[in-house]
Length: 472
Image (cartoon, rainbow, N blue to C red; front, side, top):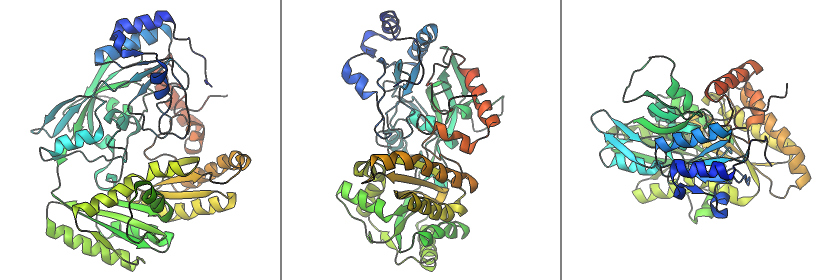
């Protein structure tokens, strides 16, 4: 079901697209349309009318000129790993795939910069820069398949954001194509730039609604030489959450500080066929420390152990080999995918100030109890970012339909009341846009509409995303 009517992709439009990018890059077969119909968001499917895979910025520009001339909607798409429906062609039209824009153009060791196209897989970039002793920290769970361009669209974070920040903190410049087909460039290999409005940071996190990114300038840092990983099990959810600010308030800055509820661990263990120590604990903290001085890391690890034990941890388990570290990370990175396999589900990406994490967690569990729904929680505790997975399990279809939306609204209202907001790293996209008024006033949403209209007066680029329908 489409939300808004746009002109259809006619044979004349297809001919223009083939002329613009080559026939081999214009796909209308059933398999290609079906593959582009879904991402990792629940079980939604919106087949486009055509998939176009431009091989260059110039051909992206040509596609947008065709779309603009005919008023055809265009949905930019990376690897399809998004969790908010941002890459779904809910209005039909063209899906513009960035899979052929997949080159690492430069790794500049002198300036600690990488220049890449949006179709580069995140892990591929990380491994390439690590080979020369550099580090690109943003670390989404899907790093082995997600594209850098998609990371920019959602401003992806991941476990290491607690120390190193999120995607926006590494984006120094962009080349992008506007809905009209015009190409713009902003920033570059610059650590300082206050020349005019910061268009680069406006586009980061805009979910492909303002422009299509075709080149990215990324800041790199030296690669830390040493890492220590440990898990601290707790028999009480609130005590586990309280240990998070206790660690940070002691002047320690772990590179990873993750909260993992028991159900999340056990579901992931079953999915990957592996186990972690103390998996009967109510929740565990996954804690990583990194740096260049092994002695300093060892002393910090001892201090972390003292703190978590004082906060109620039953034990601390050190992953003292590379193999043990890999096993723990395998379970952690599998959680999102594993939870999806258990039941029909809805995932919410709440984020609050770190000190409010305990209140949020307790509140979520109370809301779930009142509505009779099951929640599985895990996430980036060091950032205050809690992923709340709501599972249907054996609920009736009627109860799921009637209770899900009110429960989500209560969870979001609680989150906002604690100084938080309704998405930390997954974006708003298609599935969360009706909840945006919980986080923003009408004036603030209208300001966003004005920005969208300035970039995209025809409303053809990734329509029906982020902003709720204007019913006034």
